[in-house]
Length: 95
Image 1 (tube, helix red, strand yellow):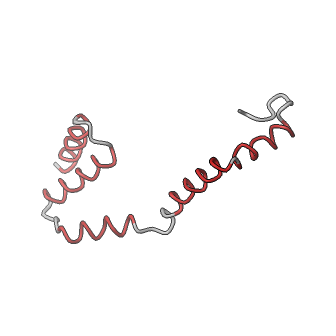
Image 2 (cartoon, rainbow, N blue to C red):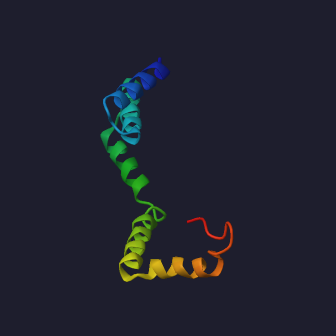
């Protein structure tokens, strides 16, 4: 019965146009309600602790570094150097 609830909620959420990540969240909440495991405080605590990761903090900083390099022209120079070194050879640079 649990699998039926999971799949029906997942397919229903996707058909409604909800992104898959949020559809899985809805499935988890639906199963917690079905199995009487729902505790809002624990749910909020798990969501915050999952997003509070040192590794996940690197993603926006990589995007910021890319934007800074792009605005400063550094990214063009980074690509121009290998293009001059191996760009003339067949299969030298896959751009």
